Length: 244
Image 1: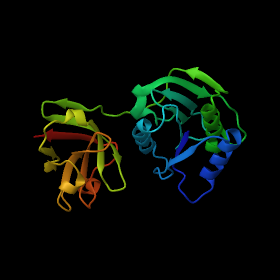
Image 2 (image 1 turned 180 degrees about the horizontal axis):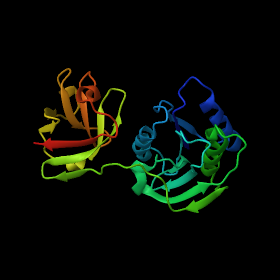
Image 3 (image 1 turned 60 degrees about the vertical axis):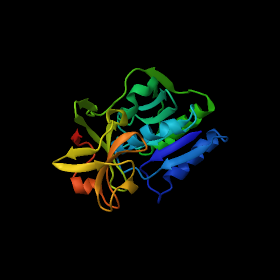
């Protein structure tokens, strides 16, 4: 099985052509679209999606990611074997949130005449071959790029972490694991007090609340509203909370 995640949108032919390339090489490949609505050039958004999908697909699934603002430059193309699944895509930080799950790493050694569509010319062919059980044009390496993230920390009743995603609803998703939060009734952030609830439906309409989401991460949300706007928070912001 091969999944595809890109920032190509849904108006152009790019994704369809990549699927055609893969089917020509590996006609039996099962191809699943994750999303092509990654925010343009947003490596952090792609990294979050990769973290979220790994455990919900068969172990040998190939996850093809083409969010590649450095296409055509000296950035490497890589294949990473994870504890569950295989990543194929650019070496530009998309592996950051699953860095501890990488077991083997390969650089893709392939020359192409065109330099603006490596999704079609490099990554799709490699993904199809890896899914078929071949590893042509791969050279083992031992490093990959990550971007800086504030690791989640709890000291007493203080939690520190980072905003790693803001979803379509404006929910603010942090990298603070649910295990760091036990028997919490209230969260304080930026001078605001937020009730801690089990799910969105327990919040009053337009109420700002905190909860542990389906990815087992601390999330700040507004029932039928936009928490990111209420809190004036962006992806990559460091976050500090007091729990009660």
